[in-house]
Length: 304
Figure 1 (tube, rainbow, N blue to C red):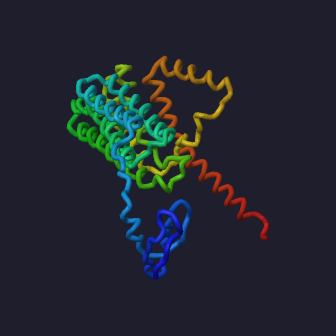
Figure 2 (figure 1 turned 60 degrees about the vertical axis):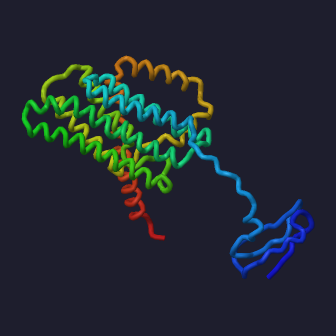
Figure 3 (figure 1 turned 90 degrees about the vertical axis):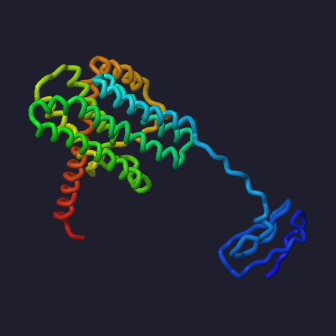
């Protein structure tokens, strides 16, 4: 079937419509013209020059992602040199940068598939490998003095943590589109890294010696890894809008928080993230309890 367009630049141009198919095509000059239902676009429109697609990556959010990667790498180097205080600080700095890159990408509308993959790989280095290496360098070499079995349990614990961090990140990437944005499924990997690195930083700051601090460090590695791959719900904070207005008194809590954390950073940070790690099982148990009460209340109610 042949059809002609309206007057204008497309006047007199003839197009061939191949059968009936759900493809909507406009041929227009200065005003809209006729509609042709066809399976293939007309050759006249195929000949139109296409605008070249601009290649590249967004700079601003990826700068923060690179800072996450650098902080994780620096933590590994510092732990290898025996500077565990600097290693712990570097991991917490990586946490701050990791919390900023995603928000900046959403605020500036610069999200991309490249940024998503780059962020995941950087998180694996900073929150998977770096805390495991820090704990390994701090504890395994010391605990091996108490026997070869303790040394094996030590590196197994740190590897278990690193493997759980990788599984946690992979699961997060595959469930991003279907998961509830208000909650994380399992302990987030930055929080797990803060729990493990914070414990090592605290023990090193307190200069605790003996086998028990080492055993506790590897127990923390096992617990943090297990919580990351668990299904316990953790508040994500993504529904909190930083651009909304808050009471003036709320602003006073910010410097107060800095004062409390600054008084003893290793102990305060480990305590805060320890409470957050326990919030997941607590919330899960609370949900189970309330559902059980509702089920019993519904079962004993009057019949309809």
